[in-house]
Length: 65
Length: 185
Image 1 (tube, rainbow over the protein chains, first blue to last red):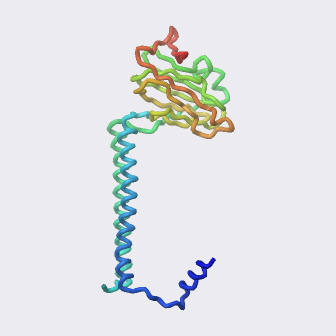
Image 2: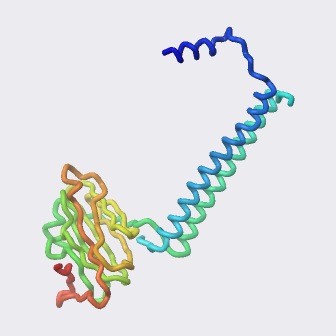
C-alpha cells in the first residue's frame, strides 16, 4: 500500500519533472532498436525451429497424401 | 541532441513498421513457396479423400464389415488396412504392416468424430462419420507404434488407442486369404 501511495505522489501531474530531455531523447532513440532486435531474434528463432522440423523431421517421413 | 519534430517521429515509426511488415511478408512468402515447391516436386500433400459411406450400416456389410477389417494384401500386392474407429476403440486393436512398402490405411466411424495419428510418422487424419479417411504411407522403421485417438470423442477417449506393428518385409506373410494379423508376443 505504501508503495502505491508513493507511486501516486510521483505520478501526480503537479510533481516536478526532473527528467533530462536530452537523456530521454537518447533513450527513445535506442529503445526501439532494442525492441526490434528482440522481436527479430524471437521471430528468427521461431522460423529456424520451424525450418529444422520441416526439413529434418516432416519431409524425411514422406508424403501421406 | 535535438528532439525530433513530431512529424519526423511519426515517419520513423511508420518506416520501422513498414520494414517489419516487409520482413514478415518475405517470411510468409518463403514458407508458402517451400510448401508449394515440396508439393509439386516430391508430392507432399495433406491426405485428401472425399468418399462417402453410410455410418449407420457400414458395420453390416461391405468394406468395413468385421470380416474385412485388418490388413489385406491384394492380388496386385497392394497392402490395404481397414479399421473402424468407434467409441472407444479401434477395430482391430492391432494392425500389422510391412516396413518399406507402400501401405494404404482406410478408416471409418459409425458414431462420432474421431481422429488418429501414428507416432513417428506423418500419418495424421480425422475420421468423420459419413466419410472414409484414407492415408498412404511407407513405414520405414520396424517396431510397435502407438496409434491414439486424437479427437475428443467422449468420456472414454483417453482409452481409445491401437498398436501398429511394423514388421520386416520377410516376416510379413499373408495367409491364403491375403490377410495378415499381428504376431502374438
